[in-house]
Length: 408
Image 1: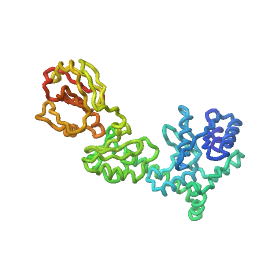
Image 2: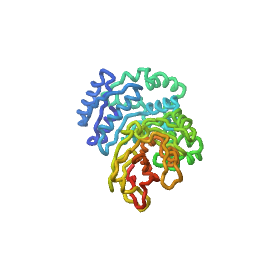
Image 3: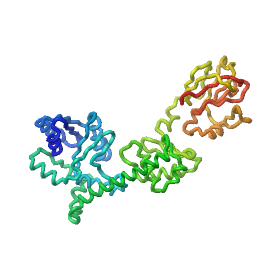
Image 4: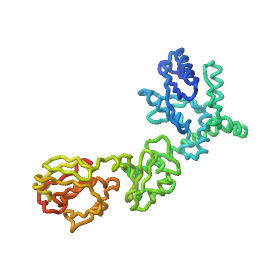
């Protein structure tokens, strides 16, 4: 309420209020009406927004619901101004410390911050709760003391009621010192972010981690870079345990192991000398693809084929290709099942198709998209995510026709 009063005095025609009703207390709607009435007196626009808080960690889910409401109602070129104060800052740092947070967690809240496309300003971060209460009473502003602030079931309320008096009795300036530590940690985080950003540019290209370059970094830089990479577009960094799992279960897995780890919303998958960051749809493509064991088709000049491995166009080639005789035939397209041997054009003898796929480095999670084109038991070629592989057969001729991959 002090923040609302202050910004009305500073920007009477440019401020509006949003009251988020978490609907966790029977009187929460009445508090919203109190805010609305005061805004009406000031001539400030006010929105009361009820939200549904998901089950789980109540404090975290309430915060998520609140910020979702802010994102939905914020307008272009607006700044979200919040009334977090010095004690909030100190509590955040200590609670993050007790949960095992690193530099990012110990940075606590920034005075000016960006979160999910919200530009946030916290002008009260260096103002004590006592001073805020004093000014509120002096100005005779309507306000509410939330009873959950005294409910020690919640970590923050416990820290405020139980821990704070003990620490303050021993260290009278503890709160300001802890809040100052957060500022120092923000400087450290900014420096660390510069280093991590450079490491990411060096080691990660197109969502692919180059393990040879990665292994040239120190262990500390590896952990920090992985932590940021796993965070992706999330708000919070993953736990230390999750970073270690990526190390042990994926990065240091055998080179021939199909190692994978899920860290919402991505899968992290080892293949050769790289770890790939894949969406659920990419990694579980076999689950989502419409797969038929076999189907019939007829090829035509310049026709387009939409297959599992991509879109192909039948084009004339200056090199060896398929004879135009095949245009008159009904061809069979079979799903690869394993154990097939193919005499690929330009190679000597029949090769296991599995070996050819491995040499071509087709990702294991895409190998179900490989399909074999046949005519009367003769293999004409193989459709793969890397293109069409021509087989040596009686249907090959110079300046023939080939399906060319035009889109994966």
